[in-house]
Length: 388
Image (cartoon, rainbow, N blue to C red):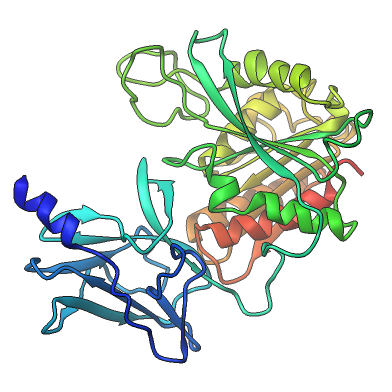
């Protein structure tokens, strides 16, 4: 154990300046030159770990462009380890080092919660895409709001985006989008990795989206004093046999009432939407489709959809297409073209709904996989359609 801590303490970013064509990643901590991104979107990683016997680079996404992971870094005579990989797919990628068998974050990177732990993140800019960048426009705020769940008796934390002008327009009320993260991430993920607040800032400034409140909660539920037992599936069984209880009663009995009583919302189904990515998409389907008295706008981003039947799915909610079309103002389905299983499931659902006469929109993010660049694009297409 002592050697592990020595290795981690010794591992630090190498502050030598990179080549002129290699620019520091925007996800680096302030002043850190590495990782750096070349003009052809190859990326050079560098870390100083003179006591290490081996340093490897790994990521969660096999479609990122890094290649088969983990990959070995090369050591120079000064104990600096280097590797250049790629070109990488534009967007956000988790990564970490494995130093002598121990997984450690890169001290040169900002930290992001993913895979149920804090990881390093690499942001590879997409040429010509600025819809999620910080711009010189009015900005909203992301507030961390603590509240106590009556359902579980535990304290919970919601991340709440309020649009520009919220604090100065004291009489104005707003529609609400409840936006859920994916498995092994948390309520911070949409604003940190997904840049949801910046996407909305830019859309609102361009008069492309209605000003709205955005609620981002952590989609897991654990009883008080109980250890975390993994993400709650949607639908989920009651707490038993190590399974976490359902997120659904938290949303309906705790989260929505708290948001409506705390923030200046328009507290009716006509002004309430729900969407989510991956696991959050599955939760959205279960919760929103089971409670159309609460939601009139629904979006699913890369949700796991298998064996979809428009007549029987979700207790037959789609069976009467005319009734569904009257109640739901938008049913939006999205997936990246490279995430084969999710894309195929989304396309199958879209085609089945079309055949059944259920109005829906199908959006394909070209060239992206199960990753935040897909979901950023999803949100940028979905949000402008809301509350019109």
